[in-house]
Length: 330
Image (tube, rainbow, N blue to C red; front, side):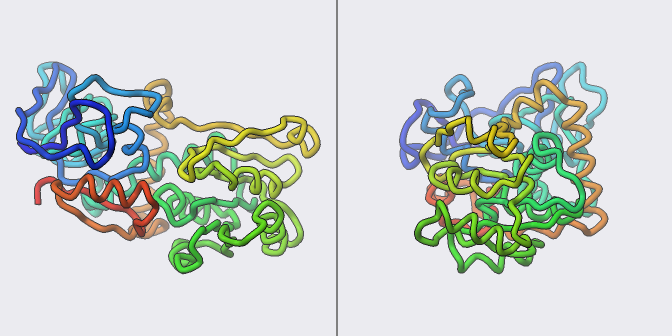
């Protein structure tokens, strides 16, 4: 089969597609033909060796591939060849075939394409846990979503709208604001303004009847965190999802006392390992909402396996619009 293989961690452009042997499923695993895998920002950290959880080399990157089951291990009973599944595999998706634990396979509804399933994967489960578990959101509250036109951001906007929250979409490129509005944002917050430290809060107050946001979801970090923490309402919650903008911010914790606010972190991979019951509920909710038409198909760009690293560079530099999806069988 063909796959992107990481022999040594290094620059994104240093990795390439090559011919390699098909993976062999263990007794509790399944082998799938990969039809779609999302290109995620976290993949940049994995292939460069800067992520907190790194697989043994050589390996193929690509989290949560979707496809058709080709074969199953000797002890697998719940999944059969021919099943359409979304997997929770931590790597292996940048390839024509991949293996995953049978317990980490979710059957795809007939109406959900592989491309859309891959587009939803990692983005929607991250957004769901940020909103529903770490953020403890309630209907009628206001959520500010930073990076609202990225994968997690668009997912968060749609889920928040589906659950009855008021949604403020933080966008760094005003030209992308319409994308956030189509996803369900009630208002857009311009993150490209000068003096963001004060003007982000001013924009939130202006869009939210003079109040801060009950919940802030932050996948950006850097200077955006410092500005966003000032826009959190009394007894509000800020959920740290990542640092796509670069620097890891710091915080003087006395500020938390002054406004009775909380800052929590989200590492969604831990939920897959430690709380499979919650992950099951999460995926069921996402599929239910999609089936009810309350989640719109995400804007996607499909690229072939040979374009994987070029696509990953565009994601890393925030040039991609919507979700970039690898289609290794094409």
